[in-house]
Length: 326
Image (tube, rainbow, N blue to C red):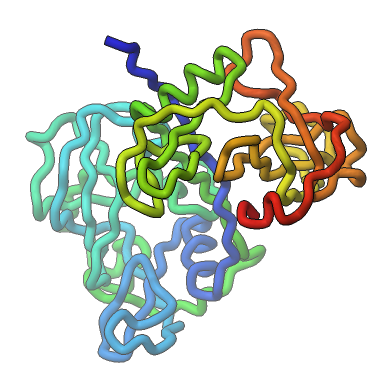
C-alpha cells in the first residue's frame, strides 16, 4: 500500500483594523480598568458594546459603565488549554452578565475544577498586570462572593448594583486601532492524484492527468475534471519546458522567503498541459520577463519542486498557442 502523504501546515496573518468611537472607548476603558457598554434605544445595555443596534440597525453611541462583577449564565469546562488561551491551566469558558448589563461577555474563569463552577455563581474581573487596550486586559474572571455588608454604592464601577452609569467614553491617549493575530494549524493530506504529482516532482518530473471526456491534461491534477466532472485516471508526463502566459512583479519581501525583491512570479503552461501552474522566474532581469517567454525548471538537490524557471533561449511562443490558458 503506498505511503499516505501528510504535512503540517500553518496559515497565519495579523488582522489589523481601525476602531470607531464605540470600540475605541471600550478597549481604552479596559486599559483603564473600566468596563463600558452601550445603551440601545429600548434601554438595553450591551456588553461588549456594538456600534449598531442588533434589532433596529440604528447607530448607537450612548456609552455606560457597568460593574466588573457579574453572574455566570452558562459555562463549559476546558481541561486542556491550547496555545494563546487566557490561562495555561484547566479553566472554564463562561458567559458572564456583568452587573448593569443585559447581555453576556465570553471569557475564562479561573476555577480549581468543574465542581467549583455553576450557573448563577458570582464572579469578578481579574485585571491583567500590564494592560494595552485589548480584551486580554481582562486576564480572566474569578469567583467572587458579594459582601452583604458592602453598600451597593461601593461596588466598583457601578452607582448601584444592577444599574449602568452614563460615561463619556473619553480617555487620554485613546486606542485607535488593534492587531489580532489569526492562525490556523492543520494537517494536510493530498489525495491519490496529488500524491502521484508530488512523488513525480521528487524525481524532477511533472505529471498530470487527462480527462477521458474532454481530453484536457490538468497539472497539478485534481483527481477529477473541473469542466466535465468525471474522474481523471490517465497519467500524462508534461514539460519540462513551458511558456509564461502572464506574470506579476513582486516588490514586497516576504519574511519567510530568502528571495531578493523585485522578482517575477508567473503562470507557466508546461508543454502538453491544458492548465497553467505558477512558479518564480529567474536567470533574467525582472523587467525582461514577458508573455510568451519560453522557460525550463531549475531543480536543486533534494528539493521536491523546482526552485525557479529560467529562459530556454528558444524563440517566444506565439500568442495563439497559449491564449486559452491566460
